[in-house]
Image (cartoon, rainbow, N blue to C red; front, side, top):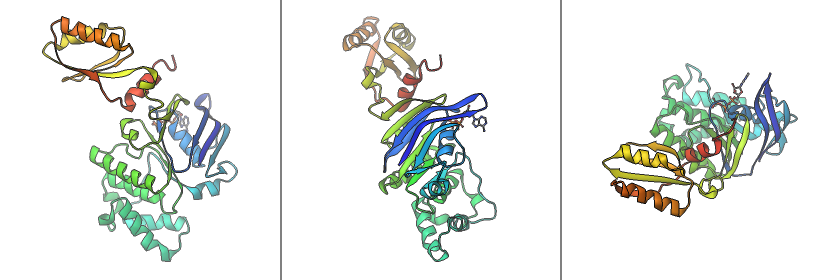
Length: 308
Ligand SMILES: Nc1ncnc2c1ncn2[C@@H]1O[C@H](COP(=O)(O)OP(=O)(O)OP(=O)(O)O)[C@@H](O)[C@H]1O
């Protein structure tokens, strides 16, 4: 449904995207993860026909973005990371405006807009002015706008950015519904854990290069022999910190106040020896075990050393 071949974009001397090869199958949700400036928006804008690549090809729903931009635009809904809403328009009028732009017949619009507002949980705001809506509501309205022409493909640039936790959860639930409806979705974020349960696959991008790609499991640390560990102790946290930090196998040690979290690269025996060292130092250990890795761990492990 979405494919890029050797996609490269240069802004003058700056290489924003280098040789990106992506394939996203129909009905899949692909999470595009990377820090600010990694090249996510650039990729999404090329796929949405808003930017011309310097080299390479991109296809959406089988159409070449360079040769058949109108067909691409009919097939996709694009939500940029920043978009304005018009003053003096109610939510329904806002959607009606976009429905008109997509040539949706007037007779079909009322029902369509009602359905879209329901999908994004804004039915009770149908007559509210868009500039009076909260950020989360505006984002959801923006999502509804992408859906007016029932596209098969959605390209969503950080749809949850700047939202509070509750609004994030609401957005995620709507995206799950869109997945169930069979949409193919490319979604970006630099807040990683929120994509884990939503995405079938993730691609990690840094400095314009795709540095890992696959199912969440495939790019997981466990596959590469790294465990994410958690340790809880009573009392002497300073000494615990020293012992953990001294181990050659402990990476990215994080003191979370009531527990320590770190990546462990050693064997099971090394793990046992670390626990023994803590206990022999007189530390009262209440928990020593593996913790569920999150995408942040994955990302940090993968990007370590990139660019150096
Ligand atoms: N119009 C432009 N002119 C020059 N450089 C640009 C332009 N647009 C983007 N860039 C640069 O290209 C690189 C990739 O930017 P891009 O916006 O694609 O990253 P991103 O991963 O989407 O980051 P963010 O999360 O901050 O949106 C950055 O170094 C950025 O500064």
